[in-house]
Length: 230
Picture (cartoon, rainbow, N blue to C red):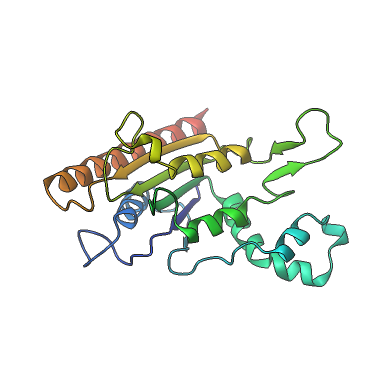
């Protein structure tokens, strides 16, 4: 079986096209998961809505605890890392991470950044050793065969590579870079644009993004099937 980790981070509740003021990114993640489960209903799905219930931000105590070797941690350190441990466990359990990520002011929502800060964990998702020859950091998820699917939305248009605002897109790079640092480099994307225009261009962008999601599901399902048969 393939385990999906479904993350939504929009501050908007509901789905666009169904609910008043619903979220475009939630619409795309729901479509991805629905189509995946239609093909493979037995595959488990872990769901976390960081838009509705944001993780706690990293604090000084969190950093102190995370960089203390487990065998030397005090009781309060385990408490400081308990939420992060749960979030990391979900990432470790997942084969495919379906990440709904709307663009807020050219980058990811604060609640998504808090989630990301909690899962980039020394000793759990990346390694660090000052005495190591060469690079003291190394990824710990690079042999896990994980796939990241970033499903985003933005109010303006032209943020894709080569577009008029590509230079201002700090959303997908802000996700690709840390996941790559952890060793997750199989990354796929789809995005809805033109939200603020609310015209035919938005409708066309929604249709194109949904078609892209459908293609991604078919492609990833086929790849998983081929891998299982090998």
